[in-house]
Amino acid sequence: MKPIFLDHASTTPIDPAVAEVMSEVLRGELGLGNPSSSTHAYGRDAAAAIEAARADVAALIGARVDEIVFTSGATESDNLALLGVARGRADRGRHLVTARTEHKAVLDPVKQLEKRGWQVSWLTPDRDGRIDPAAVDAALRPDTQLVSIMHANNETGVVQDIAAIAATCRARDIFLHCDAAQSAGRLSINVDSIGVDLLSISAHKLYGPKGIGALWVSPRVRPWIEPLMWGGGHERGLRPGTLATHQIIGFGRAASRVREQRESDARHVEALASRFRSGLADLEGLRWNDHPVHRLPGLVSLSIEGVGHHALALDAPAIRTREVGKGEEQAIAAGQLAHLRRQPSRR
Image (cartoon, rainbow, N blue to C red; front, side, top):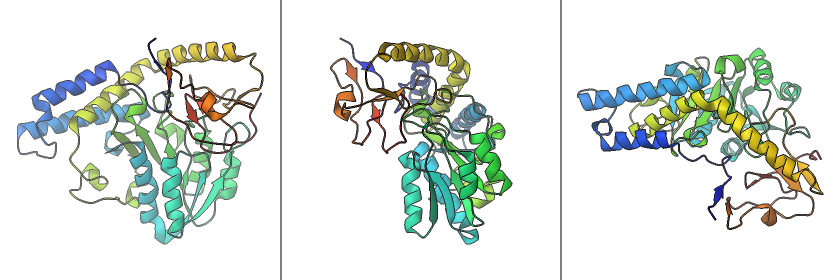
């Protein structure tokens, strides 16, 4: 029996068109030149192709082309956003706000800042997994420099009210970072409309290659963010290193694919999710961990009372998911166990 890959919350398979365009770059002359080498046509052609891909990525989130900084993925983007702003704003205050349900790409850098003397207000979601904008407002202080709240949870699929949280932050002149790695391939995003200041995305979560992502940096933040590395001034001084032409072009093609197929993809995966839910409706002890309304299309999170995490890992010969960790309440989302204790789930 052919295995079924159900772990799209962790990574998506690369789209054939993306793989093909990357292969063409690697086999052809476009992959020869260093995009920083403007003295010859090979370098200039590579640079032009990268800027075209940058435009495609910017269009995915409604941003300007010159506001996109390419990174190795959302983890690096999160680190650059958090640690970069912390460096740039440390003399103004050392307090930030985030949620306990963030991805470890946010949690771990924040914990590092705690070790360096920053104070952190840790927010807990409500029983449906959402962060109350009023709770964010209550946590803000005169010395708060940054708030980091993800757009959609990678384990439960719960979508946060980022626009309301952004309005609260903007009223206090505080920067808001948003990890949108999980949502960029599934939801329509416009950075101006939702009002964030920094936004992280990753190609491999939207049918692109692994190892490439981006951080959107708003003009408001640009004077206040410092690089984490030095060595060439690439990416407008924020991320040094020779750009990987084939990966960036693949990222751009994947971003274009999302814009073209997002709505049809959403309808398809929601139909599958509905069928899956219906099939489990009569299962005794079943609890749904996702939000009834504010959730990503196609991402299903559930737990079953009295059933351990290994039994829920779905690691049978015909179904391949990745190994999961341990927790008091087992919450499986596409084969992934929730990394924290959540509030009581809905039946």
